[in-house]
Each structure stands twice: as C-alpha cells, then as structure tokens.
Image (cartoon, rainbow, N blue to C red; front, side, top):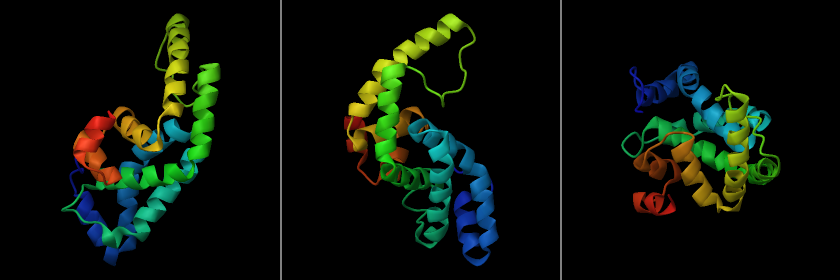
Length: 169
C-alpha cells in the first residue's frame, strides 16, 4: 500500500505551516496503526501507544524525509519504537495467550465454534514462539504478518537493511 491520493508527504509538509492539516494523516492511518498495536499489546495499551505514535510523529514531522521512506513505514517505525517501550506487557500478553489460547484482541474471524476452538488451540504454540523471539525478529515478523508491510517498507520502518528483514523472516 502506498500513500493515499492527496499525498501524505504533502500533508506533512503542509502541516508545518498549518498544524491542523496533520489531522488528515491521523484520520487515514490511525485505524491501521491502532489495529497493529492492539494485536501486539492489547486494546488498552493500543489507545495510548497509537496516541503516542501520532504525537511523536507530529513532534518530529519536520524531520520526515519523503526521499528516504514513505509515510506509512515511517509511522509503523514510530509505532514499533513505542511498542518497544511497552515490551514487558507484550511478552506477558503473549505468554498468557500461550497458556490460555484466547486472544481477546483478534476479531471474530471464524463462524463455527469448531473452527474457533481449533484456531485458539493453534494460537497457543504460536504465541509462545512469538514470546521467545527477540524484539527485532518479532517486530519484523509482525510488521509483515499483521501490518501487511513489504520487505522494503519494514526495512524503512525499522531503519535496517532489507537483507536483515529477509533473514529475520
């Protein structure tokens, strides 16, 4: 996914003179950032981390370089850094998911009770494995799987080489 028509980079530039223009960027990207953060940390933390992500983005918007990265990976990179600050809660939540198999954040994506039970049973070992990954590996994997970012976007978001992204996946 690329920046939406209307130009996210142009919105950031315009917000330097007219700060209220940044709200359009929030409106476009906050739901996806919130969903990604909620899957990593839970809904309660997602509200705070999403707010922190956009507050940080607003504060550092003058340093945004459209030649280096798109707005979307830039925002996910900021979110990843905010998530790192909440890492202990994330690891605790993944360990709880590994023990119980219940993901309170996941949407109800199965219709039948049998499918739902099978999905929850499969979530236990996956959550345990995610909890054991290093923070860097977990960031790469979850940006790929949950945020639907490509290799280049993940590299830009985390400020690491594309080869590192490939090796971590």
